[in-house]
Amino acid sequence: MKLLVVGLDGVCRSVLDPMIADGIVPSLAGVCDDGVVGPLESQLPPWTPSAWPSMYTGVNPGKHGVYDFLQFDGYDWDVVNRSHVKEFAVWELLSMRGFNSVVLNVPVTHPPREFDGVLVPGYVAPEAPASHPPGVWDELDRTLAGYSLYADTLSSGPSDDDLAQDLVRLSRMRGEAFRHLVAEHEPEFGFVQFQATDTVFHEFPDDETVARRVYGAVDREVGEILDVCDADVTLVVSDHGIGPMAGQEFRVNDYLRENEFLVTTAEGDGMPSWKTKTRQEDETRRSAVVSSVADTAIGVAAGVGLTSQRIGAALRHLGLEQWVLERVPTDLVLTGTEQVDFAASTAYMRARTEMGIRINLEGREPSGVVPPSEYERVRTELIEALAGVTTPTGDPVFEGVHRREAIFDGPYLEDAPDVVTVPNRFDQFLVATLKGDLFGEPTEPWEHKREGILMATGDGIDRSADLSGAHLFDVAPTILSAFGLPVSDRMDGSTLPIVDPTDRESYPPFEPVDPVATDDADVEERLSDLGYLE
Figure (cartoon, rainbow, N blue to C red):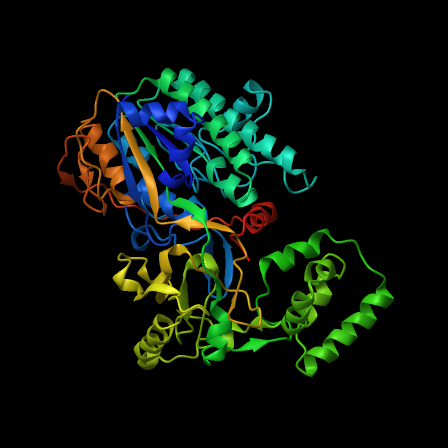
């Protein structure tokens, strides 16, 4: 193999170094000892569904079009997929120049595009997705006596031990599947990704034993992959870092409401939280009489200002909120819940992982209320207001509040939020859900950080290279240069000094396809379970 990429979602030095010191990950420790290692700066926002496409295309979200887990059409949304990524993946560019590839489990690669090689999609695809060429998923399923994309968390409600074991099983399965495909197809380029290194901290944020168990399982697979592939160049890369939250949860839409940028409704016409909606699907039906009486009661309460958020605040104070949520039908909670009235608002946060504010612009949004002549005035007011927000302890909530064009550029800039909100050190947790007050304890105890990791080893690298300043966008140009191919002149990154640089050249224009709907409730529920959808 000419070049191998091992993707480890969410891995960073602060997580990995203690495991190296304690002998948990000897294979990764060997890569560090035999090659070069350094930080890999992620992009904004540093979330899986946008960062991996940026890595495999070498361009920023303004050029490939994916900013978030969600793709919006007016006020409606769907989970992103490969049809929303409007640029060539590096394995497609390699295919144009005669090189074949095996790509396994890389996020946002479903539905696959035509190229010379094999691709089995990863994260945010439906379970058992279409692969390239057709039939390869079934081949893996037969060969491995079962192949799956996700842990079984939806129907059975597994115990913590079962879920931990399933993350280990998935890691082993990834390694076995990749080695099988490499043996069958003998690719010149290989790319395998392990998602469990991130998932374990979302599912087990306070259990170091489980984290080490999962990392040890991934490390064993990485070691066997390195031995089998024996690549001239191996890159071990992560899309972002991860770590515990040290700050506060900041409820952005509550703040926008208090400052008269946002309007709410309790009439069921806004967008409720996703977590609330998914609970609705699995609940048993309550007595029609009880539901009718309670529905009327909550409706009356809402009419006099007792919304679900205010009732919830009182229940939290008494320590009863979770007890009530486990017993009250979700449709009753929704009856009195304040929701963002997107069509009537001046500005709003559509989703927390979009990490920004959208202005309800006339002519762009279906029910825009801000005239184009007022756009810059409103945007300036938002930036000035948000830049000065501090937590109850006096810490700034944001390290930066920017116009989108200061962060992104490209033909899909219009899809970005109008104002980009960067949490202070990524220790402040931004949410879009209305909760009735501005601050609280973070909903998720661990969150993504800007600094990931890059390791390089193999006979084809310069071991004296300085990796300081390496960026996520640099990975794809480095892959092309390692093959002696020109870097696409559309790429935002540069060739890292571990290999000799090549010239830049124009590749054929990318022709986007009509977006394909994901529309998969299981995918959405898994994202909710991990804290990505509110």
